Length: 328
Image (spheres, rainbow, N blue to C red):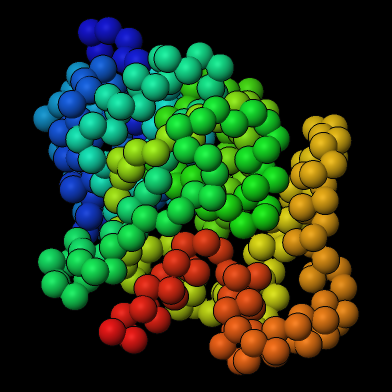
């Protein structure tokens, strides 16, 4: 590369041939140009490896290809960390191989980061993208969840962590721009989380340590399709609205240990964590109390409550849009 890029864009991929080129092209279409693109292979066996290498040959000054030793499949966290270790930029941005950025994503967010020197990370809203299919009925399904945070505001730690535990929408991985040094400071992604909750673990680490600017813009489209990580987990029966979520419990146990190890003594964070842990620590008492309360609102209210308590945010959003479509 002729000069050091300011932004390192990391796209991890595994069996991504269907949408991969569209993701890459959305980076090439950015109105901001001082970036490098790292295509990080998690052991793909389809044509996505060939697609990545084709872009390296076409744009050797901008695009690099990385893989694990022996072309291993090591999961999302380890693959993101591989990209981070090889990144040259002062800022890091992530894009999933089935999603896309809007053209002004980097231009707008770099400008904000350059003006918000205290911010370690910036994130905005994300479009849940159904209309990529071209079907007229899917156009009405597109939506942007409310973040439940004051927008265009710098939020100091650990306030966002508390809000996430209380149900605020966490950042989409593709919506963030983050300082490289901050990622190193928090130790990157936790490689014990290979799939679900790997992004939330990382964002809790960041938001407990650094100030974060929450912007009002939306610069990424989160493609909704049956082969995404969340939908595959749902289809495989890993999440059920009427049963405890063991993956979420693993996340909560990790968070409790991490807060203790880091010496976090903020009472609001701990109180919020205890509230979401209580159903797992006292399941019988919790269910009895909640069944009594929510049956007053009928079965519909009970089901909505159970869904909110047990399912990850992307899966809850997917179920919401399915129900909305069924009632139209």
